Image (cartoon, rainbow, N blue to C red; front, side):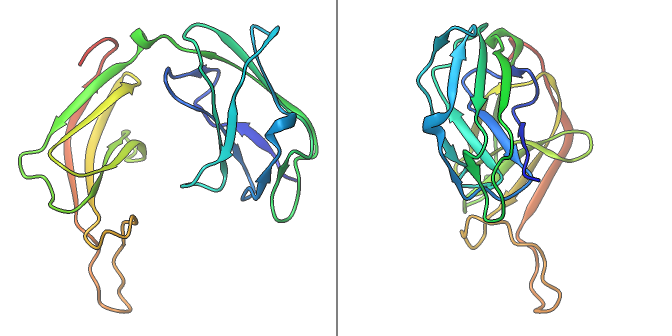
Length: 192
């Protein structure tokens, strides 16, 4: 059965971000004209929704979310489709936009930055990517980060295909370059 869930990290949405829904099936089509987004359960708010270009399991909902306000997103049944199924029941997602002062900022300056484009990732203690940017140059800024300790990793896109290619033992090709900086970056609220 197709199911939709809040993939924005719980009931608190980080400021200046999109609200993200995830599905257990690849999403083919959405009919967001039937959806409603309300602030404080009374006033309807204009929004746009689209399937993520980088992850077909995600729907990104964009609106002018105000810090400290509570929102309700209602997704009626059969308005999200995959190739195999539609969402069988209506769902309501309640969330609040968190305050900017609960987040930190990180600026990374690379002395020997890769000459090709690369992903700069911030990993948790289990080495799972929490934040990432696909960029070039020697300075990378993350404006809104949850307070925590992060490991910094760079994955270089040597062939610039926007995909980090792993090693291929069958064809004898090496993985694209990867660099990990194990000294943790400590992020605190209201700190840069």
